[in-house]
Image 1 (cartoon, rainbow over the protein chains, first blue to last red):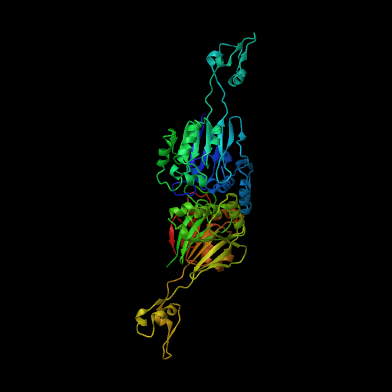
Image 2 (image 1 turned 180 degrees about the vertical axis):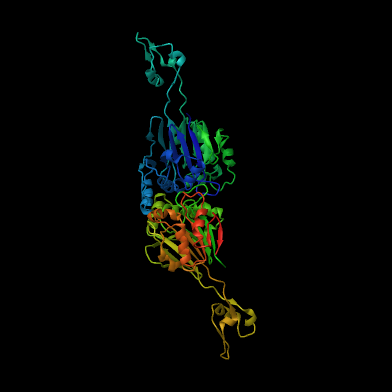
Amino acid sequence: MSAKLTILGFNSAIPTVNSSPTAQLLEMGERLFLIDCGEGTQVQMRRAKAKFSKINHIFISHLHGDHCFGLPGLISSFRLLGRETPLHIYGPKGIKEMLETIFRLSETNKGFELVYHELTSKKSELIFEDNKVEVFTIPLDHRIYCNGYLFKEKPKDRHLNMQEIVKYPEIETCDYHLLKKGKDFVLSDGFVLKNENLTKDPNPSVSYAFCSDTRYNESIIPIIEGVDVLYHEATFLHELKEMADFTGHTTALEAATIAQKAKVGKLILGHFSNRYLDVSVFKKEAEPIFAPTYLPKVLEVVTI
Amino acid sequence: MSAKLTILGFNSAIPTVNSSPTAQLLEMGERLFLIDCGEGTQVQMRRAKAKFSKINHIFISHLHGDHCFGLPGLISSFRLLGRETPLHIYGPKGIKEMLETIFRLSETNKGFELVYHELTSKKSELIFEDNKVEVFTIPLDHRIYCNGYLFKEKPKDRHLNMQEIVKYPEIETCDYHLLKKGKDFVLSDGFVLKNENLTKDPNPSVSYAFCSDTRYNESIIPIIEGVDVLYHEATFLHELKEMADFTGHTTALEAATIAQKAKVGKLILGHFSNRYLDVSVFKKEAEPIFAPTYLPKVLEVVTI
């Protein structure tokens, strides 16, 4: 199975009637991950018909309001919906104090466990792993401590080549598990059947990198190299490069340069400044450097 | 000028695609007051085409999320819109700690002054006054410290009766101010012209009471007696009276009883539990007790 990315919002700063701040849902492996959670995210999740109960892991890039002010309300709604399973929250150190202060003062009895994974490292680290997916941080360069996140499917099981397998009555159903994992099969006479003759290549494992907010930062390239899809912020056009540096953001030209140097499959831009009424200018600036550049649409589902 | 109430949201608890949590705008005197601020209020304000810069006073009833989780985002947007004038926030003790913790951790430099008016009294008190309007607290009985707010226009200037005034050349333009305030005029021969002969009654002063969230609480009746419009929460129908008491809420029948006993002009119900898909049942339950009962519509403007 491939991964599915739902763009819940991609605007910077001020929410408006037709735009929502950053939030994405990523369905990968058997998980539904929420990435960033600006104000109004829970309503966008309803519009996307997301299964609230399927979300057990939330990844917050940084503590600016347009990336996390939807969290207290979402967590309150989880409680009101009768949630009992723990919720894991990954984000910068301070996220626990922020949320727990709010819940203490609003006398909110959460009714389920919030498991905080507070991040402080400036190096990429593995922060989540199950049998299908790994998540790594992507240290970014913003005005405030900030991480992007790299989601990688682990290698998948090989497909059984039944046409070959049936030729060897010695191979039983209980052996299939090891064949799928790539093991050779040793017949009772000592003859080795090579795995590549008994199986076919697995479905490809996909990867997704989320990078917002950051200045142009080549040090992320080795981390995100070759990902299938890269979401990279592009708050400004390059004519406002100075403003981008000052505010800790990237231009469309720079985001495309990162995508091109990291040899990613596809680039999605976002986090556009409200000053641009027509965001097609971002695509126009990026495309000459990196052709497979896309602009997101709200509630669009991108198959990875 | 009368007052104008805009209902930005009136639902309880969980925001959905078609409903927003509690928030209202009240235009009275020369002021635009924001009352409560659930998540998504700033977007509702945009839908209502509200002038953000005209809001200098925000009144928060209590610290449950559906009444205040829109505040951090709204204040951040004020900053991004270049606000410089102070913003006054009235609410329960704790609101300052909640907001200041959020802004410290998100490293938000507000750029304008937040003036906190933290409330702790269990008695009604005058908390705001200018030359046209007074605002009093209405102590409510919820699970957590909670106030409603009573907004009262001060008596307005009397209208000049020019047909009479022109008969007395001694009365000059500079005297009009005192006439409007109700003063008699003394002619140079000592003869007293009664004000009621020189002026006509002023436009009526209107009043509005906002009461959410609370159990049935007759002690508010003397405070809200005779107001033109009462907004009173009605989270449940009376068949769930026990649930209402347990959760600190009112039934539609009880809200109507309060309105009837307080002899208000008009009752607006709100804060309906999500369990009721058809909210007309609230009006049906309240009307036999208090006929001028209304259900709010989102973004409806009520003239008071």
